[in-house]
Length: 189
Image (cartoon, rainbow, N blue to C red; front, side):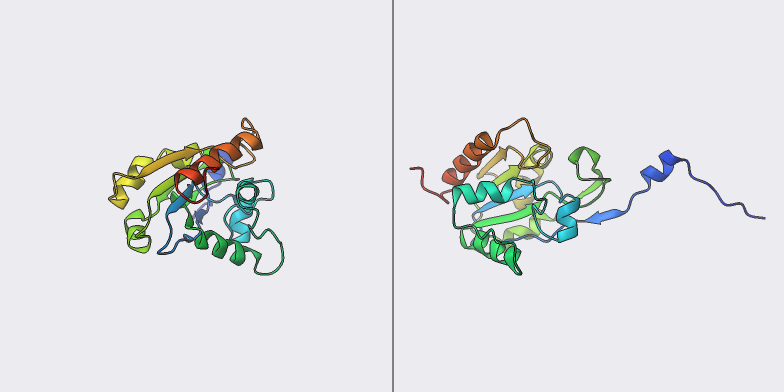
C-alpha cells in the first residue's frame, strides 16, 4: 500500500515554478545595454520590460528624452522598443530564468545567467553596460568577461524599481542622465 506524502508549508513554499525571462531588445546599433536582474511579476504578465506602473524606468527615459512614446494603446510597447533601438539603447536582464515568489530581487533562487557571449555578435557597436540596480551589478565582471570586451565602461545605476525608495526620482534621473551623456546618447548641455 502506498501512502501519499504530505508536504509541510515550508517544503511547499520552496517548490516554485521556474520563471523564464524576456528576450533581449537589441540591434546591431545598440551602444548602451541596460541590464536589469529579472522581470517582476507585472512585467512577466505583460511580457514587457519595466511593466509595473510604479517602476520609474520609462518615466526617467521620458524625462531625459520627452519623445519617448508613453501612450498605453495597442502597440505602445512595440513603439517604445523601436524608440529605444533607434537611440542605440538595448534592454536585457542578467538572469534568463529563476525561481522566485513575488517580484523582489532578494527572493530570486537558483538563477540561470543569460548567454552574454552570444550577444556580442548581435551588438557590434556595444560600448557600455549600465546595470539597473545592485542585483544586476553583482554580475558585472561575469557579463564583461562573457562578452570578451574588457575595456568598455560598466556602471551601476540606481534601481528604477518601486522597492528602491531610498533614492528620490530627481536623484535617480540625474544618475541616469549622466550615464546617457557618458554613452554619447544625449548631449551634456
